[in-house]
Length: 87
Image 1 (tube, rainbow, N blue to C red):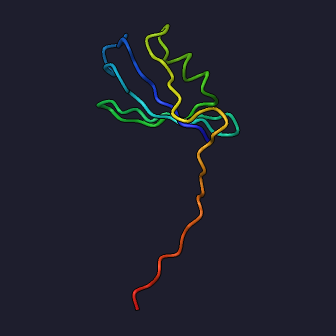
Image 2: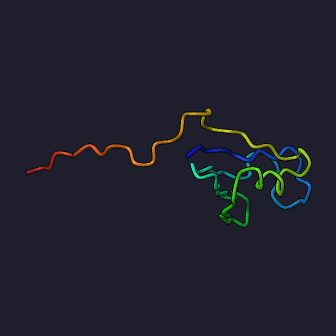
Image 3: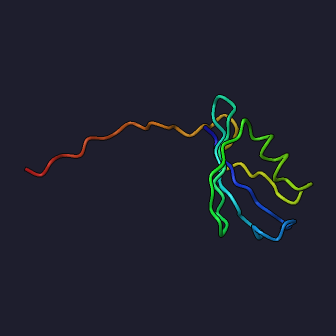
């Protein structure tokens, strides 16, 4: 899984504002999810990140900014360290 953000330089619709407007993740099977951080919050599932950009890129007004570098996927199930009990 690789994380990304949507940064909007120009708000074409007048709804979402500018700056960081959404967070997302691209999955290893190609799928993607976007969580909108705007006044009306929502979560949307996509077939791929390219579709996200086709719909929400608005001709360059919105950029996909990758949080994780290529090839450095986020580990989904990090090892759990046992916490000693207080006896």
